[in-house]
Image (cartoon, rainbow, N blue to C red; front, side, top):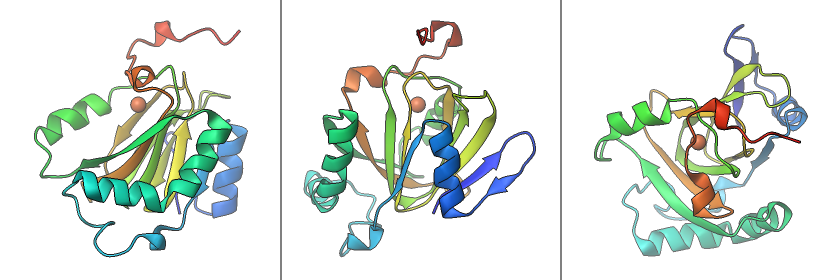
Length: 180
Ligand SMILES: [Fe+2]
């Protein structure tokens, strides 16, 4: 279950229901899927082969399909970040720059941990969402955010896309589309 940490006050929300409620007030989709459905080494194995990726996506197909029908998502894949990732430190430096996308950024944590720091779309208040296996978040389009790993230094996740083109990072906040 995720944890929310407010950047300025260090205040935390650790209760599942309250986390869902807070994220809902910010217009952020959060779900928790049953990670124990993954059999064998599908959760822990960081060597991503097409076979293993397909097997993981198949296990969560009902959840992915239901969310995609609601939000208009069209494709999904598996991504891993770990000490074995070439240029991991450079990648992380890039991910830690505040940016937004023109479509939702959707991540389901299969293994490891990840942190999205989000500028609350409704009030501009910055908060961290620490994500653990089973957590799904959809950072809404045009919402400023950045991503980091925890001390575990690894994450394996399902990414779900509307179109891969929309997932280009826009670093310049002045390029935010007006929300008319
Ligand atoms: Fe992003």
